[in-house]
Every structure is written in C-alpha cells, then in structure tokens.
Image (cartoon, rainbow, N blue to C red; front, side, top):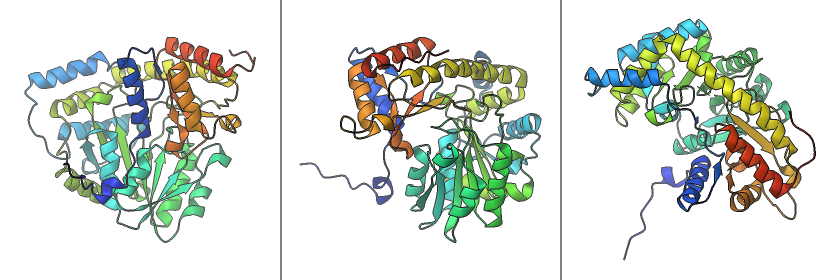
Length: 402
C-alpha cells in the first residue's frame, strides 16, 4: 500500500509548463514512429556557435571545474558589464551583476528575493507561462493587465491604471513570448518612471533581447539612469540569443542590494552556474565581432522564416495572425473557429495534434484562450510541411502569400 505524497502547498498551487507539456507530447509521438512537426518549443534550431564551444573546451583545459563564487566568476561579471557598455552604452557596476543557471533561475531569484505573501504583481497579457507560477510560488497575487486593445503592447497608462497600494512588482517581457510584440524604448522608460514614482519594482525578461526585427531595435532597461535602475532587475540569458539552451547560463543586472539578496538565495539552491560555461560566455561576450555576427545571422534567418510563415498561416481558414516585431513566435487568433465544433483553442490544438501531427501550444497557458502559439524556430521544410497539413485539415482562404 503506497502513501499519497504530501506535496507542499507552494508546489501544489503551481501548474506544469504548458510549453514543456506540448513538447513532451511531440517527443512521445516521435518515439512511436509518427512524423510529427513540433512548433511548440521556444528553442533555437541552430547549434551553439563553434567558437563558443571552443571557449568551453579551453576552460576545461585550464582546469575550470571547481566551485566559483555564488555570484559567478569575476571575469564573467566583468564581461557582462563590458558587453552592455559596448552594445548599449550602459553604465553598470560589477556588484550589480550575478550569474544564474539560465534566465528562468534569474527570474526566480529576483522574485523570491523581493516578494512577500500577499503582494500584488502586475503581469501583462499575454505572458510567458512561468511568470504567474513564480508569483504563485512566492504566495503573492498575479494581477493581469489586458493589452489586446493596444495590439498586445504594454503602455505606461495601462500600468498607471493598474497600480494599487498593494502592487510590489511589474514583470515585462519584450520582445514578448508569445506575441512577438516589442515595446518601444520611449514607452519602456515611461513604464519604469511610472513604477518608480509609486515605489513599484520592475523585472524585465530580456532573453530575446537581440531578436528584434527592423524597424524595432534591441533595447535594454540596463541603459536607464541609476535613479530608475534602482527599481529594475534585468534577467538576461544566453539560451535563445546564442542558441545555448542546454548550457543553463544567465545573469541578473540589478541594484547592489537586490543583487546581494539574490546571491544569498542562490547560495542555498544552485550555488552557481557551471564554471567552464561561465568562462566560455565571458570569452564570447568579449569576442563581440564573432558573437554579434552569429546573432545577426540567426536573427536574419528567423526574419526570413517569419516573412514566409505568417502570411502562409493567414491563408489557413479561421486563422488570423499579425506580423511579429521580435522573438520567433507567431501568435494566431483562432477565435473565429470557436463554436459548436471547437469550444476552446485547446480543442483546435488537439485536433492539429491528432489529425495532422502538428504540435503547437494553446494560448490559454499564456492567458489568451482563443490563440495558439507557433514557434518558427525550425527549418523551412518543417514550416512548409506544417502549412500543407493545416491547409488540408482546415482548408485555405485562397489568398496567395508572398
């Protein structure tokens, strides 16, 4: 006779990641010999650039296989400071930077170091699935901001209207997952000014920082003046921008006090990210010519795919999708399809999974039932095959795409 495991209240209140659940479904189908097209996971299909791999091997050969300081190697942190100075003109101090095991841990560290039970956290819709779960873990309250009326671009006025005496934190993600929207730099600054004036902190997830398509441009809140940055924590990651998802390396840029609190927390959890990976990333950040060439090459390819894929999606009967400004997602409105046959967007996703072996992520996990997220971080062959399958399943409007 087995006992029921007494899951803690903190974890029991959390939901599993819908993006990873969809990916697991795709993996199971592949294991059963099904030719599945997986458009669910936000993972670059590019391999890590060779020069970064060589830097990691160089770190191993130098014997960097031991513990580092919890905040990370000084060389790594200095490299982050130098990179933001060279790319954005940001003036960051060494004691404002800490290494983390990927961007997700950076976000957890920042939220757990700040939030108390009962605090309110503003989260614009649509949101990355993990944001409200971090808030739940902290026993705080998620307060959602509807942004569809502004084409899913958060505005300072929306933030100002949402702040109350209980508001402690605002979470921003631009370029946005899942919508692909980019908040203009001037609006980003206004948002932080509104928050700072009310004593509200801002956590910005910048993991898609460089994946902004013209005329949008990469912009980091690390560039703000010190009096505003006092209220900001930048969560950075190498996972998407440098195709290093499996390396689990990220960082935070925040005030010295906020950083100290995050480092104290991390000292009892992950301790620090892998030593020779920190070494490789530091070398890569200083090797800006090769690093930015790799980033620009990937961004250019994502843009090429986007320019074909989004018009092709709009050919599918019942699909409606605007052109993304950044990241590598198409956020498709399928509300026109809902009625007797399909009650929710999850029903549409399930039919796609079971009848044409194409995996996407239901928008409900992003706070947007009636939408589906398609990742185009895959080959053009896969995208073309997916469109053919969807056209056969749902029909086409007859509108020709470019």
